[in-house]
Each structure stands twice: as structure tokens, then as C-alpha cells.
Length: 111
Image (cartoon, rainbow, N blue to C red; front, side, top):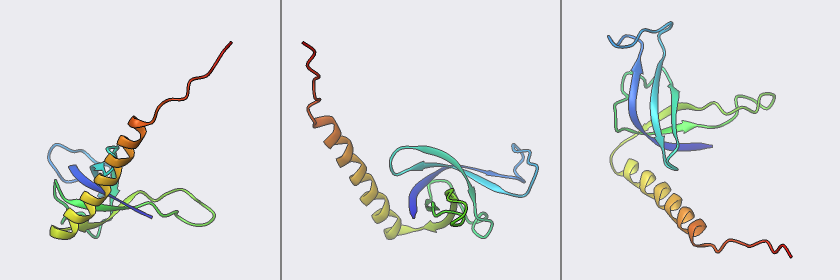
């Protein structure tokens, strides 16, 4: 399973305002459903990643024995594909929010 997000900030180990214990890169991501996470970036794409990029986050499990999601930024999506994927997911999130907001709450009768 993969989830799209947008890069808000990047934390590279060699930046002057970052002190790091390793060579890894993390990114602050706004997800399509308005959640915000700081996630690891796959080293193969870390140098190409920029703020405002649309990315895919790998949520597949590490293994069958360890069903914890990887949560690693694994792809950078550009141009039309980036806009398409972001718009589709955001529209879905807005529709779900609207649907929840318009439902009439069930009142418990206590008598």
C-alpha cells in the first residue's frame, strides 16, 4: 500500500543547520488526508528530493512476521501525474469529511 504526500521540509545530514548521527535523510510530509509526518527518505532518491515535491510513501509491511508499515518515502512523482494523484486523494478526503459533517448524529434516549 502506498500513500501520497507533499514535502514540506527536508532534513539532510550534511546541512549546516542539522547535526546528524548518520547519513540518512528525513522529510516532513503533509499527507493527502491532512496528517503530517516526518519520514525516512530512501537513500536512492534523497538527493533529488525537493520541497513541494509529491511523493509516495511505502506503507507495506516489513514482512509477514513483522506487520509494521515501512513508512519510507520511495518515489517522487512529477508534473501531471503528481497533480492527478494529489487531486484525486484530496478530493476523496474532502468528500469523506463532508459526508461525516452532514450526517445527523444519533441521539440516545434516556428516559
